[in-house]
Length: 401
Image (cartoon, rainbow, N blue to C red; front, side, top):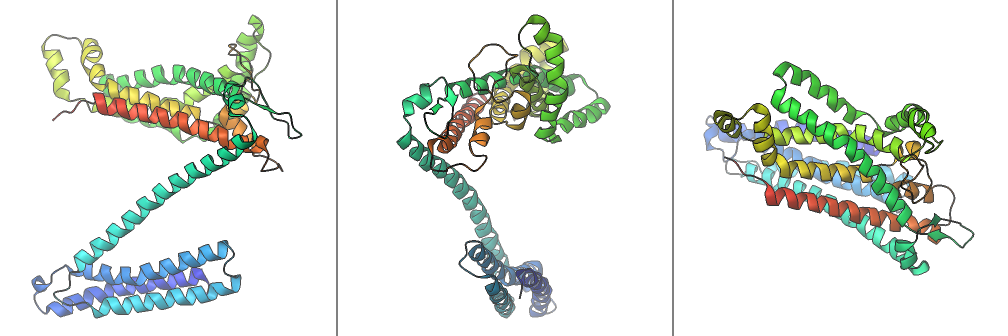
């Protein structure tokens, strides 16, 4: 039996078990349902879960075994039959234990709690798996390439025939430079927009403007990258870079930074708006009652109260900017250089990670393994930013009743 058929049959048995469980619970209570320990709904859910969960476990294990090659394709029918058999057995057990004193609610809550623990365990295990894979492959890289040349080298020139120079400094400089320009664009515009929406705009204006701003968050980054490549880059080159003699390329740090800043505006604006709205209205009323103007109230009362949250939002936006790839690929180029000229092409860590793992390369060579060292470096940077943001928010957060 195919696994898809077994899944549908198990779902049908679970639905039937729910109806049968409720009916038997009503029947066991006689004319007075108050004699039941749990409501009939919980009895039905306990039967449905007993029928569905064992079948799902068998099907998931069977699918994993087929993916790893432990089971052949022909064995999938056997797995489907086993899953269906487990569903039938679970249905029978669930129906047989229904009586007026059965604590069905406790059983259902234990099953749900176990499922929640399982989901949280998957998230933790996935994080550990990502970290360990980066650490082990980075260790392989540093066993073949000097760590001092990696962390302090000023050139990134991978050559798969040997004699490569794999210094991270130009990539780190490009990442921080582009992210800095992006934050210069996103933070003022996003913060001022949040202040206007939360403090000055009326309900009608807010209901129209806020969704329009948040539309930017739903645009794929590849679209932003094309916008940088086709529109923003040529415009900056023709209007500023060439007349001032700063460069002749449409791919530049400024191009990627401006477009990335536009992408981050709804991120900063939405978080700041929520944080400002969390400041109690009583603080505003008190300041206005003492004679402060609305602008003075915002500067001296609202923003100081919301400042820790706003700083945390900015640091989280910085983490988002550091990890961006597609906008940099299309807007900033792929040149690993150290320069202060914002109209010169540069690249970031994420772009080089993609380029080093693209193509038919020797996976054991340092030119390929350097991608894992770059990934671990980027992971540590973003982790530190997130930790700093959490510390600031927790230390300076104001608690209001």
